[in-house]
Amino acid sequence: MYHSETTSVNAPTLDLDRLVAIDVHTHIHADRHGHFSLDDELLAAAERYFKGPAMPQPTVEDLAERYRAADMAAVVFTVDAEFTTGHPTLSNEELAEAAAAHPDVLIPFGSIDPARGAAGVRAARRLVTEYGVRGFKFHPSLQAFEPNDRRVYPLYEELQSLGVPALFHTGQTGIGAGLPGGRGIKLRYSDPMLLDDVAADFPGLTVIMAHPSVPWQDAAISIATHKANVYIDLSGWSPKYFPPQLIRAANGMLSDKVLFGSDYPALTPERWIADFEKLEIKPELRPKIMKDNAIRALGLGVDRPAL
Image (tube, rainbow, N blue to C red; front, side, top):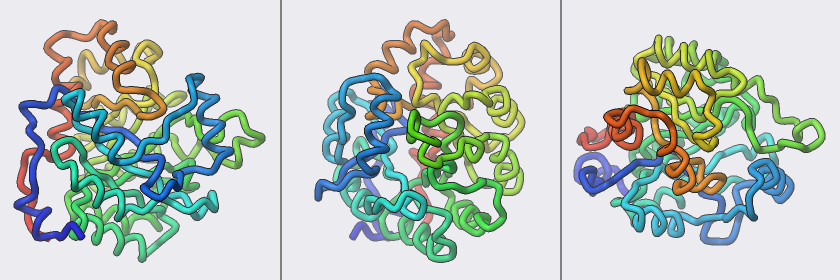
């Protein structure tokens, strides 16, 4: 086990000077036992949605090798949605233990389905204190919950007390896309305006809104502008498809609040970066978007006190 006394103060840290970028949004789709994060129907729908070749199903080790070769670090996670999908989730503990073998490139996040209630709150603390998890990923549409539901607030309170960020899927999703009824997945749960309540009620919790929040992009920009504890990651879309108002915000008032994210394996970091280089982004802002903003949002390079 990756014990808390190791992760709190003496854990190996990323060589931030060496890294050229930090990808804040990557998925682990397969574990060491050959189990996948989604069932066959949902995986096939996602592949059709992203219109590329068959989507790879990277393990932690696969992802570490890829990012190390590129001199980049990556936030890695799965999504716990077993309650709604009936598909067994990948183990947060195994993911964190595997990532601990690659501390030079991987930043492990956990995923707790809010339906787990008090057990989920306890699990979150254990993942941080015993396994070195640095944040948590939520997918409101896939997990079928409203982020501002007061029943989830004990979990946010725990994350705030632990000093770790919460990253929420927002906007359109490729999961279930094109299936009858979208396989029951409801987009309204991923309206970023629901996160405005969360950010206001938990000012000590860093909230990262994942993806261009289409069709609610203006709402996401407004929230990130208004709330000091809210960031936007730019994952899941090739930059050439970014809404123009998002590009303007990244070039101006949100230059400290937007983060490089790919959504690998749905989109490779190489393709994202190649398309990002073609955007009219001020040269002095590119390092902030690619790395510096993530260092601040994730609390990297700062010793974390023992919990």
